[in-house]
Length: 410
Ligand SMILES: Cc1cc2nc3c(=O)[nH]c(=O)nc-3n(C[C@H](O)[C@H](O)[C@H](O)COP(=O)(O)OP(=O)(O)OC[C@H]3O[C@@H](n4cnc5c(N)ncnc54)[C@H](O)[C@@H]3O)c2cc1C
Image (cartoon, rainbow, N blue to C red; front, side, top):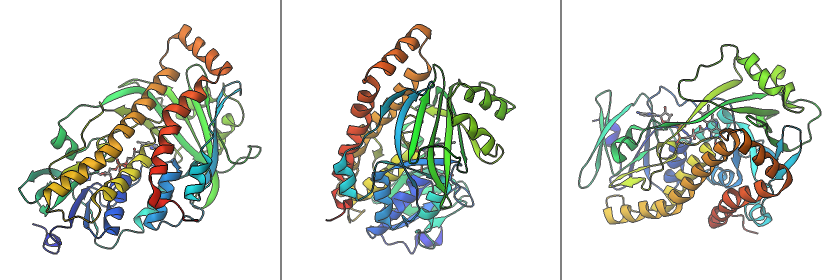
């Protein structure tokens, strides 16, 4: 057994597998409540997936509670949906009471993922991260869980948190291999320095009949810039274009200013990332015995509002909140806490993931006559606005308002 196992305080020992945003969030939240947390990461150091990210206000509030420095953290943005003739289809308003409760303006903030992640990592106490620890399997015992790593080491913990991403070994052992499926979409995510002539604090999600091309303001290393991306229909094993710049330029030429201009402002070797989007059938349970999973390990996402980094961070916070300051040897307490966590998260997150998939299908998979009808309805009615408000915003708003302990006291 590893020797730090011996220094672990029985009843407080949490083994987290995976130092991504979900695992680190859980570790910070549980540490704040007095748990003795070790985060086992298979890589020599945690590496955030590249590119930019949009995080919403409840996530910012969670990070603020952990102690993340919010100075120059992200760029505030108002989100609009448009068609590729620049016609406005929906502008996402957000409930002013949410804004007031958290004391944070608006809803979406754009930032470089590595910057956000680095600020989280800064808060991890020395010794909490255990690198080069590739999870192999676990064995549940009456009072503890033994966690085995591929290098032959074993640790004994009170609970195991599987935060090991979309190909999670913990989730596979706990809930079986449900298999990943390609959702029929590929995204190109890019970022660049600022461009002239774009209205301030404005992000646009723009659709042609087949493609989406979008942009948001963001901060990278505290400096302003833009994240921009393309979503295109794809399928498993589809060939990847060899000339990415030409491929992307060919899509952007049918989109309004400023989108075509982003191309030349972007270093196509270091500032663009391809994302083949896979999901898994939704799970109804995220825990079994002393094992609980979160983030992509139980709900891989797609880019349509499913909001993976944000939801993984929220999961970590909700898990710790449900556990409170309990004795982790007390199995009925642990079971009850896991069930509170699942009641608060599973249906909410599964809904978001499924809604995101539905939007992906609606925007990219409809055959020609239906796609034409879709565009007519979205261009001339409030259907899109109402759908997003009802299926995404109002649920997120309810969840945000439930986090009263993170609201600012006035
Ligand atoms: C290219 C790309 C772009 C994306 N863009 C966005 C975006 O703009 N907005 C957004 O919200 N989401 C985005 N996502 C999704 C988002 O990255 C994920 O939802 C989020 O990272 C999930 O966090 P996580 O902590 O659950 O998992 P991960 O970030 O996958 O972290 C899992 C961690 O576990 C480690 N691990 C894996 N297996 C083992 C093992 N056997 N033993 C030990 N450690 C292990 C991994 O090395 C990793 O550090 C994007 C994803 C990709 C691939």
